[in-house]
Image (cartoon, rainbow, N blue to C red; front, side, top):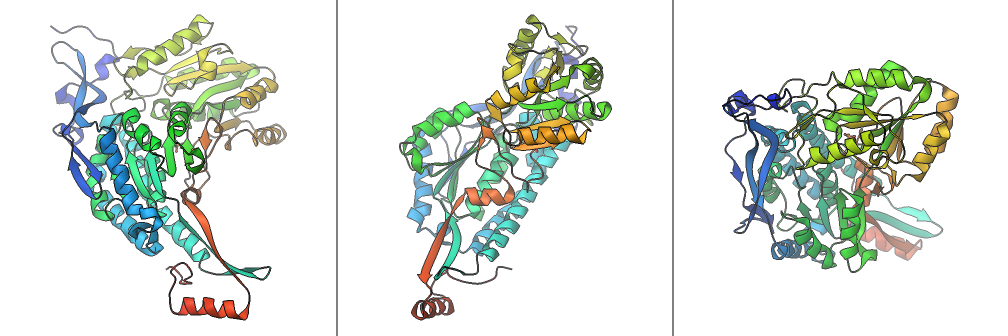
Amino acid sequence: MNQTISPLAGLFPNRADIPAEFAPGEPVFQREYLIGGELKCWQGELAPVLSPVCLRDENTNELTPYVLGATPLLDGTAALSALDAALKAYDLGRGEWPTLPVLERVLHVEKFLQAMLETRSEVIKLLMWEIGKNEADATKEFDRTCDYIRDTIHALKQQDRNAAHFIVEQGTIGKIRRVPVGVALCMGPFNYPLNETFTTLIPALIMGNTVIFKPAKYGVLLIQPLLQAFADSFPPGVINIIYGRGRETVGVLMESGNIDLFAFIGTNKGASDLKKLHPKPHRLRAVLGLDAKNPAIILPCCDLNATVKEAVSGALSFNGQRCTALKILFVHQSIADEFVQKLAQEVNTLKLAMPWQAGAQITPLPEPGKTAALTALLQDATAKGAQVMNQGGGEVAASLFKPAVLYPVTNGMRLYQEEQFGPLVPVVPFSDISEVIDYVIHSDFGQQLSIFGREAQQVGELVDIFANQVGRININSQCQRSPDSFPFTGRKDSAEGTLSVEDALLQFSIPTLVAAKQTDAQIALLKQMILKRSSGFLATDFLF
Ligand code: G3H
């Protein structure tokens, strides 16, 4: 018998409601993983992959997560065989891959890109079903990743061109090239399981490192269509792809002491726990993208309507599940009531829908238990004096959570410090800008912030105050990573290292220098080596 359901629960589809073009195919029970150039078949346990999208039973209205398939739960032994393959391919820097001329490595990456493009519609659909990303954002993630690969190739060629010449300093002739570091372990986050992962994976590969890649916790199946492309595009062992629980697989890799580069996008606790397992931490280079609590600082001189729109987009794009999302809004008390009223109205115009539906803005959340965690944060705030300012804010149906604007949020509420990574928008009124400055200075995080205001003197002074606190200051616009040619970094618990297209190439390589005295004899020897092409390192070819 049909039970009455809430409007929110009614947004979940019956099987018949799903348009054929967006319906997932048969569930995929993946057993393949990639080691040493071969797709192996895992005979052990599998981890179920459940979509955040639930199916609504036509008769009972019961909501059940859509089953997408399963992925292999490898054990430590399988993870170590991936490490063996990566070590063999690197061969202490003497392997084919780390010694390959740059142009040839580029050709391998181009081959991979061509094969990847053929998986476009499949991967986009899996992004929608596995992590609930709406169609427009899922498409953007795929295309942005392909652009990132193209831009990386372009940047590497430019870097190589710049390195083609010799330099002469104080009677010494030198030639500097960037060379690989060793074996890299790359792990990405669930919110950008393709893009963020590939922004470390591709630079690591193209610089000549060999790689072990473990996909994120959710958004795992979407790598499967790419496995063959990886296997076909790179020499054996250059890229190895493993699956499974972090503590069982990645733990043993770190404990081995054979990981040289650790690229990780996730929590600072996760990163610290793993780094500590390495027996020689001084030999581990880490490139980390971690937690953030990016504040918006909304001054009385702001353009209120434009600020509201930008704040909503900054706080709630992809349900607030972006490391760069605006996670706390500080609003001057002279405009706070009006701002909050407009904000609440704007939030309530957002369309809650399934990822394939036109204009979907708020979609189901992929992390099991997330709606309960958000509710706990909301209740903590309301118990301590905040109110939900938008009608229906905080309503839940299975994995759907209606965004909630909370006001006034104060120090002492969990939302004041904790990263919600979801559709909660805490608003803090302030009377003196020093309260906000103190917050930023004493925060454990330091990724980005946004200042909204139109008075040059005030905004300019704040820019200088915050320049030593965060990695990027956005003026009258939300926090974000793009354009990918800009440095993406953070301070304190928010990041280690810098990722832009060009910076990533530096993170995954080290400079090596060949030097000789500027004497006739040494110049003659260098000339001979260049002429006879006896050293690839010393070659002065211009890379077209
Ligand atoms: O989750 C963190 C992403 O790097 C954010 O990228 O600001 O372009 O959405 P985005």
